[in-house]
Image (cartoon, rainbow, N blue to C red; front, side, top):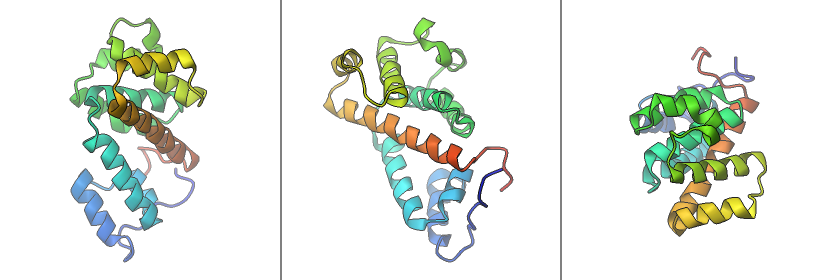
Length: 174
């Protein structure tokens, strides 16, 4: 159970934003139900994560593999629960999902995916990216893709930290 109650979607200050979230996302997920405690934060979050997930040129399969792996690194099951189906819909295989925890030893990932996963691991675990890891990711991605890749990794580290600090989980009642 979450550490604080979920926000009230019927609260007057949240109602219009809740309608927008439902229109854009299909439902009010637990994450957004927590965020609506602060409508300005929820609105900024929605805009930022929409840009990351829907307006970026990053390959959808790669993006979702990174998000699921970040969720694994950070022990954030809600994030993984939400993104595994999206990863599969974006073209990841169940075998890739199953192998993510040991991606370095798996032949199931492309060279580009491996470089991006190494970058995500460095950004998540060490924060400072070693020069050799950056050199490989720099060689694989142009400037725009590198910015979008970095922003995606940073954003989903933020998401997992928010979820886990407040103990937001899929099995919580609405």
